[in-house]
Each structure stands twice: as C-alpha cells, then as structure tokens.
Image (cartoon, rainbow, N blue to C red; front, side, top):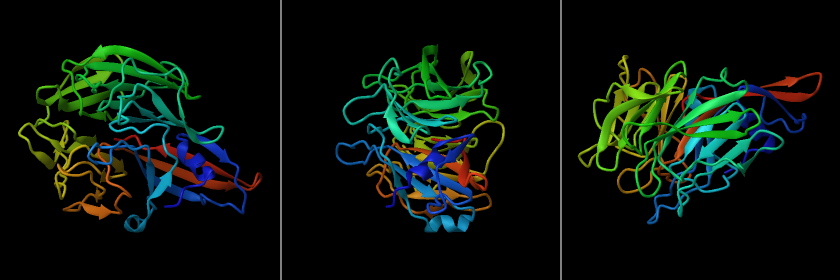
Length: 359
C-alpha cells in the first residue's frame, strides 16, 4: 500500500485553515481540486489477545462516488502508541487520539498529528487524563467564543480497567495544539462505557447514548454541554458498542446476548435507513454528505475488515474496498482537502476540513 507524501499529509492534516505546502511542479501531489479521504485509526486485530493497533489507513473518496469502490487503501504514519477503543478528536490543525487500550494498559495520554512544522505523530507532553481509560466517547462543542482560538471538546464515560466511569472531562485545544484538561467538570447520572455520542446540529451539546454501566446494557441518553449533564429522550432499545452519526444509531449489542444490525433514529426526525447486511458491534460510522459509511467492528467471532456504504434512496448497504486488516473498536473520520496552485508563488494552497461526524 502506498504511503502519502509528507506534502499530501500536510494538506490532509489541517482543517479549516489555509496551509501552504512547499510543492513544486515536479511534485504535484495532491493535485488541484477537491480531495476527500476516509481515515481509520487504531483498533484491535481480533487475535486471541486482541492485539491493539497503531496503524492508520486512508481510503481516497473521489468526487464521483461510483469510483469509491475501485480505490485502494493507503497506509499513513503509525501513531506513537497502539490504541484500541480510543477517542478521535479533530481540531482545526490537529488530529488527537485520546486514551485507549494499548494491549497492556488503559492509556491516559494523547497522540497528536500536527500540521506544522512537519506532519508526524507526537505524544503530547503535560496533557493527560486523570485516569487511563478506553471505550469513552468524545464530541466537539461550538464554544470558541468563550476562549478565542480555542476549541472545546467533552469526553464522557469509559472504562479504566476496573470499573465503568461516570466522569465528564472538558478538553480545550489551542490553535498551537496545546491541550488543557478540565477534569470531572460533571458526572453522568449512570456510569457507562461503550456508549455512542451525537453532537447537536449547532454544536451546543452532545448526546451520550446507551452503553454498559457494569451490570446492564442501557437505553438511557444524557445531554452534556458546557453547563453540565442532564437527561434526554431514551432510545427505543438498549445498546452498547454501537455507533452514532447524522441522527441515527447503528448496530451494537443489546441486553439479550444478541448483536444488532438495525438503524434507529434519535430525536424528533425519523430517518428510514435499511438494516446492515450483517450484525456487528464495536464498529465506526461516518457521514460523507448524505451517505453513511460503516467500518470494521466485531461479529461475535472475528474482527471485521469490511466497509459498507448506504446512500439515500438505496434499499441496502453496499460494499466498499475492505480494510487491509480486520479491526475491532477502530476510530474513523473523514478528511477533505481543497487545493489550488498559486501562480505568483508557484505553490499549492490547500484548505481542508475534518468532517464533523466521526466515530
């Protein structure tokens, strides 16, 4: 699998900013125009010990959707540490991987893929959670106006290797990539790991959906925002190890020892989306415009390498190129890149956006 050049990764890693790549006419990648990638990070290989992965894979998503099924996965630089069940957070200039299980311990630290001076994964110094955890959820809040040039995220629940957690932390990320953690800013009413999270359309709050409290699978939902945590409308069914995106929850595990393949609407609007072709848990889902993509997971016997897509008007999910390896509890995110050549500087200007919906 080909690796992207550093210049390509420079364009991909930024989000919401203009990055000028040192690129001449003899090294034209990425080309002018619009580029989009499905990026899958970490997870577990599903072996006997479920070895954790530090690998990062990217699938190009051209403008023509019919071409997606013909693309090949690229391998991007590995993270500093293997991470299964981590939380991926995308800022305007960095991609953060928070916590996760590395095969030995539940990590409290953060790997960061920075844009400048040269893209590479680094372990953030001085930024760590109060406890190591995995299987938490994280979402972004639109609160930049509270502290200029800072993006705010909430991190809720998880598992520390001994018990399920009810903590809600705030992570404040500066444009330089410095992370300030406000630990235990609130408490969930129930501890929960293996939940899912949905930011609202304005980014004012996030719904924390379902999960496992150490004794039972939950249907309850809690709303987390800058002021604290409160109850929200319950899901129709208990779920854990499910994914959530664009107002729906997908698959997971229920309370009666059964994997799920249905898609349930959350909130006021009813979204009619067909069932997955096969049941799964511990997968990731992302939105690409009005399409949904489901990546990897666990079918009760093995880690899955299949990737499936649903588009409005379709009656079933269709296959995209399979991952290079099966992955259980990976993270996924979509990256967009817009490039044009500056004639006066003979440089490639790239503006990119990380999709709001990640898993």
